[in-house]
Length: 81
Length: 361
Image (cartoon, rainbow over all chains, first blue to last red; front, side, top):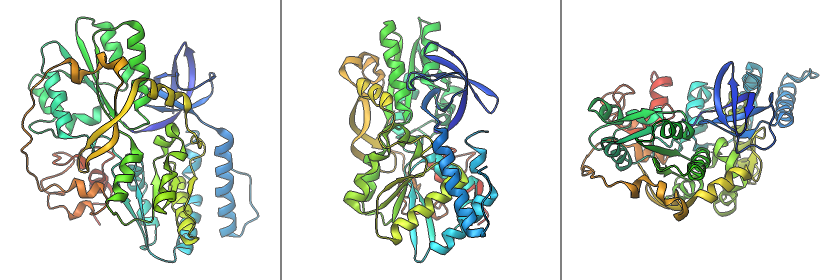
């Protein structure tokens, strides 16, 4: 029950939306996330979107990870992902 | 899957494992306090990527595991009333009560039905107005706002056949209780999804008052290893603080909309934790304004006497004092098929994860 997964919003009707988790569609309450649109990613937990996923922050973490990889492998660094 | 696969790259885990091995210059013990972390750590084999000097312990982070037998008994008693249906999360079905688990109670005629959300329980109440629906509200700060939203919706509809039996719990008071008990750890892998709601700042008291390292972590292999590395670096530099590795969803202040829903519907109360006992102001109960939805006051039920003695050491496991194989029941009388203790029931319990992924060790 504690599972929370990134889900893409595929439709919105009032406070409720349909979201896709890797192709599986669930109903999600959208009351806790402000100004979301179809196509946005949210974190789905027990039938509610509890936060918007922040793409920029995800990229920043991946950039840090890549830097660490490069440092330890002594490479020049490729594009992130 | 976006936001998942990118954090599961072998090259990341290999580099992080090497960096951790280089940074680990002494013994370290870190505790994860989220059932999702416990499960992910074992599923991804994280301990096998860490040097022997770095030990991970599982704390009381599985809401199913810490739900008391008394609460389970109450659910079963409610579901045995003639016109009542109890709607509960599937993980609770096999949790042992004093005499029965919910699954065994269903076999004896009690009406317990699995739902995926509080909203689904409210839909049951809407579609069958003659039947009283009790939603079993279990979970930490992550889950409780969903219950709050649903109670407010039931209130605005004027619904009179929807109730909540709250066993919602708060994580920071439990972490503090463990620290006061004197657990010897160097830091916490802080619960990422609790922090989505509360904000990372909810854990500031840990470095401030107890001088321990804290990293709010995500749930993929790179997240977990990165967090361990950040914890080691905090310990090495003697500069404990709260850092957030899981920044793609966690902010310092958290989800303030969700916090507002929580504050509107619930107020803190003392709570009983399986294995940890009574912890002051660690639970959530409905405020007076919403008390009419409280199944605890709306229905009178009699409960079996809690006389069940067991050699189960779930309590010590939840406090990180002992590990699952140290229990005499582990893998003999207590298995995922026939659980004796709550830590073996839930997918996110320490004993269950250990049995599934580390039993050969």
